[in-house]
Image (tube, rainbow, N blue to C red; front, side):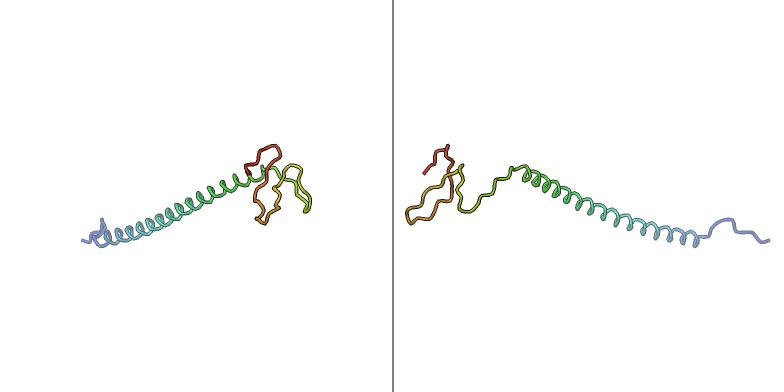
Length: 104
């Protein structure tokens, strides 16, 4: 009377559990690496996006400044007057507008 085996042996069950545990650990490690990589990439993109926004704002601000006409050497501007430098002192570093009172 030979009976056919109806159930798994203890060794077969332990082997299946071990293989499942190894596969689960591998999948978990892969997901952790992917999650860390995604977080680092999102952080880098966030910093880059903030810097790009700041540079765009600065660029727009600088582009909105009206350009001053270029001054030719040897010509004085009709809008500004400078102090005369008759003494041996160094020339002043500021100019005064004709309509505004100069403090010095």
